[in-house]
Image 1: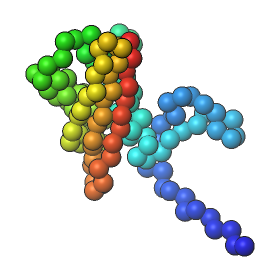
Image 2 (image 1 turned 180 degrees about the vertical axis):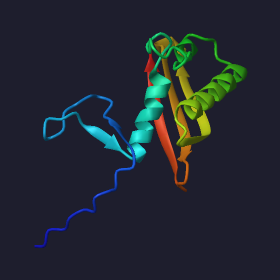
Image 3 (image 1 turned 30 degrees about the horizontal axis):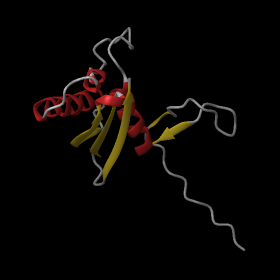
Image 4 (image 1 turned 120 degrees about the vertical axis):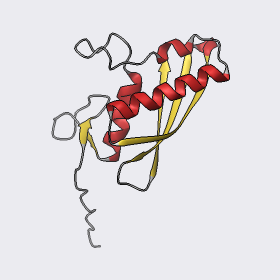
Length: 132
């Protein structure tokens, strides 16, 4: 039986794994390329006001969405805010669609972002869940 080596992907971008877990060598595990962009989107959406002390404008007010009485205008406003926030803080990303699944009774919102990476043709998706 022949051993087939998987091709090694060229590392264009990298980021630390969101769970800050160790890899097999004991170093912090990292994600690369498209997964790095997904991690960036999750970090942008999941950072709330006051968490980045040296960069207070890097924040979202999405936590308030969990408690709001939802209506189409509010959802449209938050979708626009998410799109603008992601495209401001990660210039690799072009957001095409932002959708929400909101459960205010359980203090839960799930945000799904469809996006493209500049110079790529694929459409990617990232879902981020916020719980209060």
